[in-house]
Image (cartoon, rainbow, N blue to C red; front, side, top):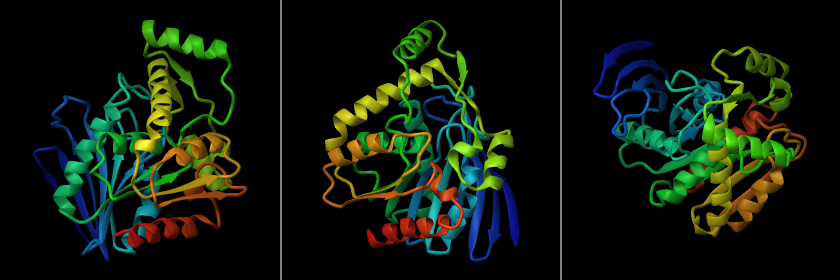
Length: 299
């Protein structure tokens, strides 16, 4: 195993060569839009057949996908994993954005880093939960970027009903106190049946448990906009949904999916699974392989 640290024009990188692939952690500090410093990870097989930009869910971070990207590397997929602003090791107020499109800027900067490494190999996007919303709206605004999208339990709507009074309070707070942070109430037991991973989720200091008023209004506006514009999406799509999701609405995911104009689209609802399908015991490897094989079939 060989490791190397260096500074680049974008920030710090640390590279480790682990047969049969190399792994890099780095930061992007010099950003065109002046945004916060972002942390990223790259997983690079020797001769990648395709590259995947991975966008994690709300409140979590890219490090929680290490075993997935390692498995994908074994199938020849390079992977770029970003900690969105306000998440994980990236800078920025926790659980907050001024504009939803700030997250698109974050993906743009990771794409530049990823392209420096993989050059012109086919590029796909993977998004889990909130990351699925960010990725899909990013693909709509930059239609020539991706060859196809893989979505895991995308956050196109909440699983539970939000009272009208709470919605109104959030809208008012977004205007007068946008950084007001409110607990999400999520626990590890809500996202996976795996008790060990659930405990790690609850005690991980990089997993944020709050959301701000501005984040809430920007996200709900993005969900409405996506539903209205979904027919503009013509890319191939694989959407794998959790049949027993306690976090996001599977019917809302289906409603958006049905509006996609893609001629090649697959909706796979996994009965009984919780939200984090790639952390569900016994089946996560099969689902990860399904996703990788889908990418390879669309080269």
